Length: 389
Ligand code: SAH
Ligand code: SF4
Image 1 (cartoon, rainbow, N blue to C red):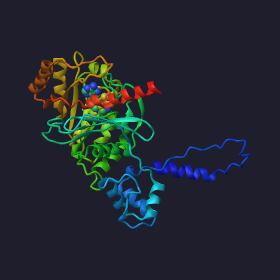
Image 2: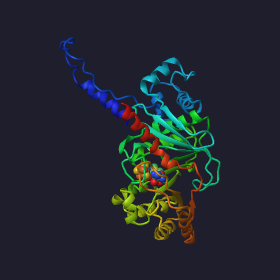
Image 3: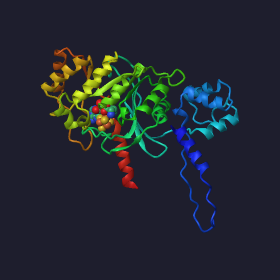
Image 4: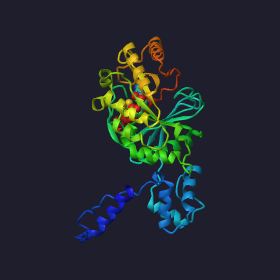
């Protein structure tokens, strides 16, 4: 897309006659906005191969470039020392190579670490690294899980969530999604082996960039993280869930349900007015019919969605789709009135689900408050910066 936009711009510029210089000393120089070249980290190996072949480069060059990006973690074209200097200069002219600035890191080794990044255009995003995740997403493991953002802000405005509080700014580009992982690994010195798209933003509202990023993350020449170790979470964009049903990559899908009736769900998730429960569950039927498994995320909010009746109905939905349920006690967000139910009430909710035969877990560990973390740190920093400006 970026390639095409750039070519269009060039073609348009060629067709127009260059304006005659009037009197350059008396008139300000008018500069036209230019479209920056595409990012090297948004390109697949095939695309790079085609690009370099068109320039007469030998076939092995593209793989050399991806090795520099994803194996040796080069931080510039200049660092790609076994490429001829003219090729490095040509790459620098054809592609951008940016890295996010690490603004803040909270937490330490063995605890959940939160990273605040500043993108090239100044926008802030958050990612989280969880060092070990026993039973976090249904497996016993000692994986290092990264919780990654897909948008700056979020347009869906769920009433309980920090990410949507400041509205939506823009989609992340594929390289900005991948860069979160590279930067976390660079900062922490640890290898990520599990990814959840549960940071800021609605992943399915940025589907093309998300899928492009996932292909690079998953590729043997890329970050080589298995699709089964990648979880996409959605607030329930029914048409995109149907689209994902035909996607060949076997990543995992989590549906943020948070309410088992339209009444409860619409109260906290405005998306439910667009795609109500019946529509969402039908899209999930289509997904499951393609032999794909999904799971439900259900945050427990005191007095809102934690009744016995909601548990009964949630169990019914889960059984219909053979979906596992992850119960997550709500994490309080500064400025919002919601709170988590008592331990006792959380356990009762879990028991009802299990009594109905649903497979369910309740997140009990401290330090796994990843979702609440995403969005809050950015908001604090953004507000502090606005006040001091
Ligand atoms: N937009 C997507 C993914 C990002 S949110 C989605 O909604 O699924 C990732 C998960 O964090 C969602 O299940 C979301 O409901 C949950 N979440 C948001 N705020 C939370 C909070 N304060 N406490 C617990 N979970 C929260
Ligand atoms: Fe957006 Fe997900 Fe937060 Fe809802 S829960 S506002 S969809 S990030």
